Figure 1 (cartoon, one colour):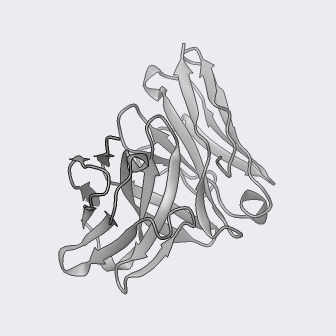
Figure 2 (cartoon, rainbow over the protein chains, first blue to last red; figure 1 turned 45 degrees about the vertical axis):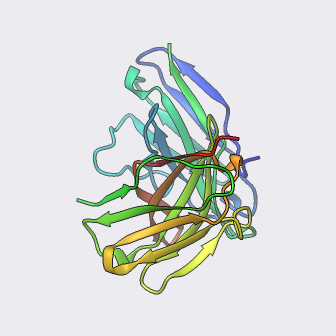
Length: 111
Length: 121
């Protein structure tokens, strides 16, 4: 059972906006630790998508954005494209577990 | 260019030992922690442990403490993950990843391509 909870799946038509939530607790997200997001395309290794809640590494398209407000964290994909079909994971740090914790993962399907 | 290149897929029998590797290049190997992440078939990502190659300081997730050993060889810029006695439940893809530390926490910016370990039951 993952420490961070994500919806199992979200879907949208090309060009639409989808969001993925990531819910934690007072020992991770609620404690003020940053949230980071990874994209895992089918059959490949995870790739850093968003770091520090809302920052995009060089090369990540601007249609990906992250936000954190209090204990509410989300990843948004604006202008969904077929190549965005992948699994997405949030990640943070948990001070009570002294663990790097991942979300349960969300599969994004482009209709 | 930062790269983490992992050793190839392995098929082992239950009870056998195994050591897989993660060779780093393109940056100072001793400056960053390297972590290992497990992904069981069709499942999510689980952090296993992490090592600081400069002094081999190692931390393990409680879930993996005693089950695996993480090490590093600075002379060849390589981190290792090893098992002394494999079980069928160790069948998974294993990734190494470089850790970045910030004031707000930690994340993994570069990942290896993964090593598939298969232990048929």
